[in-house]
Length: 93
Image (cartoon, rainbow, N blue to C red; front, top):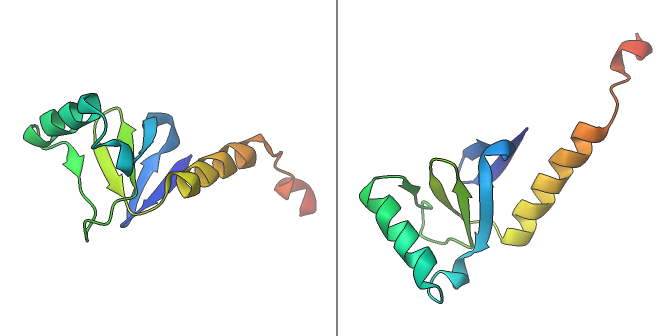
């Protein structure tokens, strides 16, 4: 399934490694170093207005999202719930 993470970016949920609150970036040297290195490799997608609330780490790219961690978590959980539902659409015809 796919998750809309804001700024017209849609990613596959299976590629998500972590969703981190943006405020943790300044308190963690490991996160700062990871983002610094990925920026050098041009593997970071910034928000359009630099109003990031969350950092979405995928297998290939790091995205700064204007959506909160809570909102992204709800969207990811909604997708997993939808995956578990059975499809009865053929029976209705």
